[in-house]
Image 1 (cartoon, helix red, strand yellow):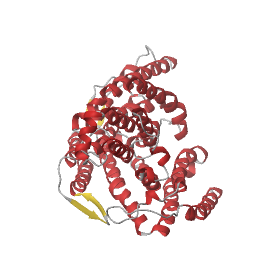
Image 2 (cartoon, one colour):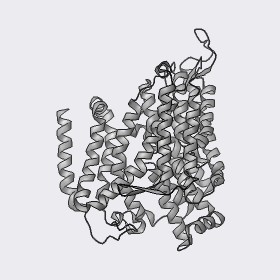
Image 3 (cartoon, one colour):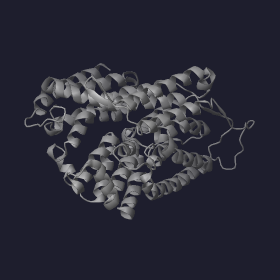
Image 4 (cartoon, helix red, strand yellow):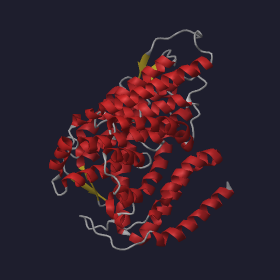
Length: 482
């Protein structure tokens, strides 16, 4: 452990010495609020801490699991410090504004929503005998995939992951089940409405009609059907291999029933508040120089109230029987605080478009298939909402430069709809490629591990599952639709 700490200290010294001068440059313009546009002047070196935190998440659990379990929060803070301090020294208030913006406008609502859904869903317990056969498991995943578009991928995942895990606690091979659950319930299933996934909600706020996202139905169905067939085949193989086919269940069979069902009211309240926040306009509120709409703050406050009411009214026994603990949300909260902080330069570089150091990516995006894959690949590692917005704006600028946004969006849908479909599908679907690609992925993994299901590592997930399963599916989608 001492060697690990010394190594981290050495990395800090090297990065400070190397990155401090490397990220400094000249020639930035100012945005509409008078802040220097850092995205136009930061170099690619500024993404090193983001790569560092990703490698930490991938490698520490493998090579130093005990250290990681007790110090993951410190590692996250370490990488956040490595990027925040140099930028604050060089760019002072402009850098501070950028970090505050992503923390207040993005991280705070992200973690509040996740906490609310985690807390409320933890009070809903499915009692009774539910045996995880291949058919039962497939049906649960189908239900979750359908629910994801109407209560959000996070809501559907948090509601169903615990019953799914308990139904299969007698099975030897369970990791692949959770992975497919992440593929479909936590990602692809959320593609049909703006409630389903944050990038689609962002499009809705920028003028995309609420039910337009149903244009993604063929793409979602093709991906889901392929994955469900593959899942059923794999589950059946392992079910038979474990010698469970035809084996009688021991013990008395109990009927299924819900405990803590009133938490469904709080769950509907959370989802409803998200929808309402996109339909009303109560003005704007400035917090530490960061402007957010009043309805967004009201939504966050309402979600907190729903979570508190769930804690007050839910019997402690229900949460105990549900194997509920705060560790998963604690882990996600600490790690994603570091991820959002270190991700700031990456997003600034993307938002700078052809004027930033990532211009070589932006400039090659021409055809719908380019938008699908570039938006998707970046959404696998970055926040998919601003990534969606970047290429959404790129498409509007490409076809309707100088046209007011409301008119441009309507024209894009009427005349070049395939580009918006490609951007939307890429942002939602590719979130399943990594544990950090979408909010519920890491949470599902954490809950599964806490319940005793050994999950693949960060790279293991990508190498064993997403690369060999999802990428071929996305290639098929590309050939069929783009």
